[in-house]
Image (cartoon, rainbow, N blue to C red; front, side, top):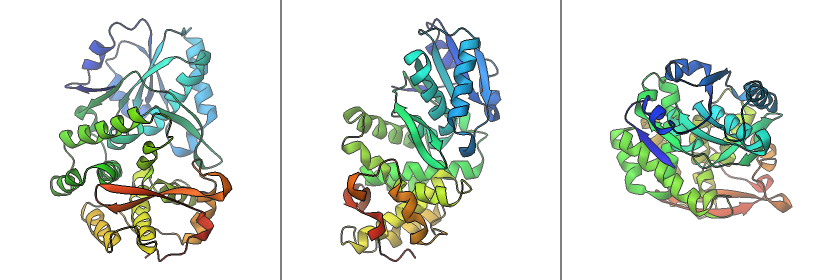
Length: 319
């Protein structure tokens, strides 16, 4: 459930009736939790530290605190933090509750919503995890004020992605006016609505993977040096080019999206040849049986479709 906060401190009011709250936070945002009255664990956050070992450390800390099955974890940080804290909540004592206070734009519009939790395995994104819905996701504009510009741009890619698959008018508004609190909440609610109809990604929810099949492969090839949002932006352009090669996407869509993204400050040119990405796409956690992958293809802003094919059969111009 999305809850908008006027001030960060309001989270204390929302959780005042909770008997046990334990905070797991990204040490880079210690200023957010400094006035919280609960016990707190700082963690290091990077794709290389998004592992079972880190999750085990969270669980050991909970044991040390004598956290019971009535406890609630409050995850404070970006998507890596909410993914790992949520995964820890899903397995500690066979499952306790958690809530998210996302502190990046990307996590506010995507990663902290929908109950996907997990860690990486051998460089492959989120190969281990579980669906575990948060009790609440608290959205606060306050926490974005210290966010670096590159992090804001990374989140912008996910915001634009959400509007590309569901709201063409909001997509145009975001391009004209940039990121606003109203647009953040609109994107978050679009994802929340889709997840509510398809919580375990059996159908419609897979649309949210627009740009992600290519994007995750780009992240893997870069060994984490390309941030998730930037990789998704590149992935959306590649998905549009694939769609054009198949006669699915509107002619010229990839060129138009490329111009839009570049005007918004997002990178659009994948630095790797298609052949480099194919192995990672074939091993993607969402890969289907028979060697096929379900690609999300943009038709026009506000509309996407699914197309299943073997990534080794991809042959289209990536430039």
